[in-house]
Length: 307
Image (cartoon, rainbow, N blue to C red; front, side, top):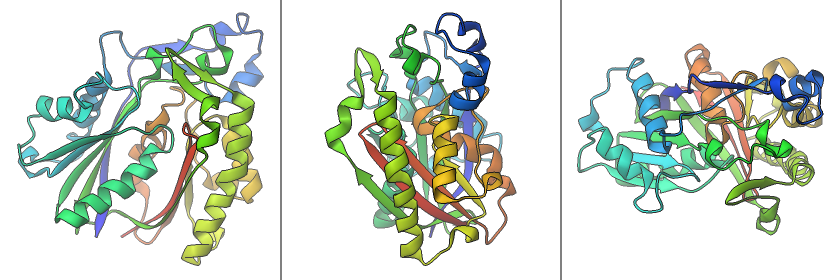
């Protein structure tokens, strides 16, 4: 049994206010707060790279648990904005943290669905190889690829990183099941060609169509009812997207976590960023739902139970 036992996180101290951009983008505060759901964005320094954000998240993790680096069997980084094309960012993180040479390290190139995909991949990898301790990092510094004059992206994305500690035979969140999907024919609706381009309407329609079906399918497979899920952690694409999924699924709004007002959409980090604060409050036997969706176009949903 592989469980998520602890999560470390990092958000840069620097913030850029969306409220200061109302005139530039001809919008208003109601739209910023109620539709986008991002009042200010966390932005890294120019010198920081994805690996630096990962290391900061690891430092936060070590304030929550006394971790022996020699015991770490694998180090995985989810990013689509790596430090370099070669080598993989996980190698840089591995060296910076002085992890053992017996530690496997690799990257996963996925965006908003990446955390849920990564949990499944790393859990299976650890089980197949008899590993006991793994680190799953997420870091996608989109500030490097955002066009500051593009209203569709400039008001949404923030920088941040997380690291989830996965351990064998320890109390924590254990996966009950997953659902995955791809719509590669729509990849051009969210693409980086020197600068990030997003067709907001197309991405919204994709999300609103596939995510409720994915979650319903997964619940049916697990023979669970929506009311049996104690909390939902949906990718923080925008407040409007989260609210729409909540409405279409008929979820109780108080069970759906939303909190990116202060830092923005952190891509693959958005779900674990929420969990990093909430994990200690999830009681044994409680179930939570996760769903990531976006670039690819792709989606991934999962149900976890605290064991």
